Amino acid sequence: MKPDYQGQSWAIYLADCIEIMNGMPEGIIDLAVFSPPFSDLFVYSDSERDMGNCGSHAEFMEHYAYFAKALYRVLKPGRMACVHCSDLPARKSRDGFIGLHDFGGDLIRAHQDAEWVYHARCTIWKDPVIEMQRTKALGLLYKQLKKDSSRSRVGMPDYMLFFRKDQENPEPITHDPADLPVSMWQELASPVWMQVNQTKVLNGRQARGDQDERHICPLQLDVIERCITLYSNPGDVVMDPFNGIGSTGYQSVKMGRKYIGVELKPEYARQAAKFLEQAEAHNASLFDSIPTEAPDA
Image (cartoon, rainbow, N blue to C red; front, side):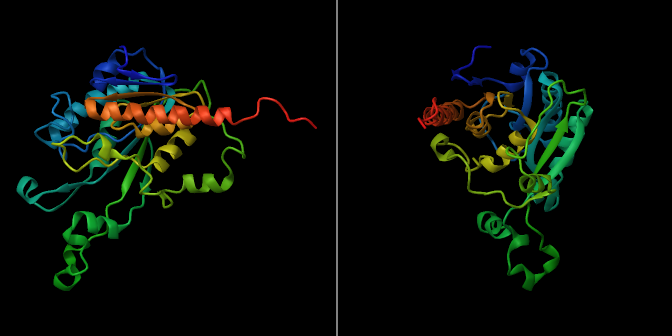
């Protein structure tokens, strides 16, 4: 259980997340924030332990069931897991039709089967023009309206799913108006997060290997910040079982939390450690700038 990278308030394990969680004491994590592999859509690493290396969506969900149970065990009573996802594209060659799979619905059922309570779902707005430019999706092309608009569709948002370990929380998470004013709460309480900066992400290009697909798309720091603000206290332990390049850890450390990340890909773990060192250095420099004594009158 010795971490491969660590700082004063964080640790990253280069290992399989289910094996690491099964080796942890029960109920030591205050909050989990993560984006799981999107079924078999991408190849993230060449490890046989990688959940994304599966033959079908059904096989992925079979493995995810073990993950949901392991995560439930290590989370503290009454605390939350925040799971980022989106719908998945269906392909004619594989699925027999062109459309979408309700990936979020599958994740909800998997967590419920593992005793989680489905607490809430938030839609994260995304610009359909940017999606069209990136994917060239037929349904978003303006020229499709001239051909047959029955094939046109709305853009694909992201979702944040919230699951609760439904036991009494012995350590309430509290806020005061200075920490979380009414205006901020109204934005957080909205079922659609409209103000997320889509470009506020860590630079994943630094961790990309020569053979990687072009799929590294780190979770927006704005989204992570909102989850940490809502569902953790300063000093709490935040976990990302699919660490990637360390976005959750970076934001957690900057916000005065402790962090545990688990990652299978050496390049990602190595780059994540650099980002977390930067976050820790940022906190140290802020602390140094605070006067330790009141100025003379």
